[in-house]
Image 1: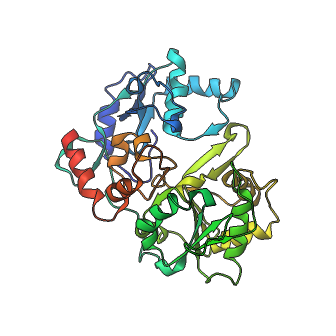
Image 2: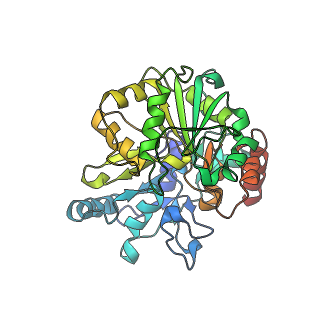
Image 3: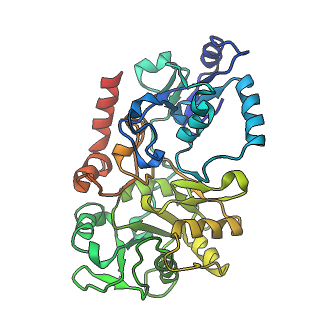
Length: 371
């Protein structure tokens, strides 16, 4: 049985539920999620019928029978993983177990739930989810978070105004970094040319500037793209759970080559959060870009891996749009970020999902309707 840190378990009820299944057979059990439409985070799998494939909501807990564990153990030892990238583990686990029909599909178990503990219907559940957003003390003061927005001249007129109309108002310390210094925004040219792909050169220039006398000294650095949508008050609450005196790198964690001794990294679009100590250690290590257009998030992952500084995953950061995630997966979250303006109105998305106080009622209502 696999659990998340926010999963709550009623052991007697769980034991009773698991006893319904023949332990001599292969079982893959969980709360079933499915895509409403094909999505990039699942490599557009099952594009003809996205709802046909189900995968587990990790927050509800998921279980494997021992016969299945034994077979998977042998398989992993004999066969390398087919994909180098780990993007959405719950979907990739389900695909790996299913093995194009050779293995079992996920069996949905109604008693594995993501309802809040206080919900009256939770009495029927073997697992529930803590309904509280992460908060470990006083939220970090907004004056203690320096925000760096990566942009370029061609997006000054469409993406930057969205930042200013939405979450940019929540920031006390924010700078826009571009390939062109536009005093009307204003943007700062760090002397790094714009690149079509990775932005490693620009990101490392931002790291150096963060430690320089050009910006106020703060404990935390947030680096985002110009099409990232984020709630800074929710980030301030989450950061109360971390110590900026330690090297902290926080966001949505992806993986590269993990089956062959690879590394994890924080994906850039959802927002990358660094403690000052993490930036100090990164730059002191001498780690640097192999080219200006190298993927900044992956290079940083390699650097942190070499330093043995762990990258910390939070499921509240999102590299894609709300439409790219299962509705029930988002229903028990208080999300911190989403990414991309593609085929959406970003201001509407911000107001629905990230503007404090407004999203919660709508999600609770949709959850009740599903029940």
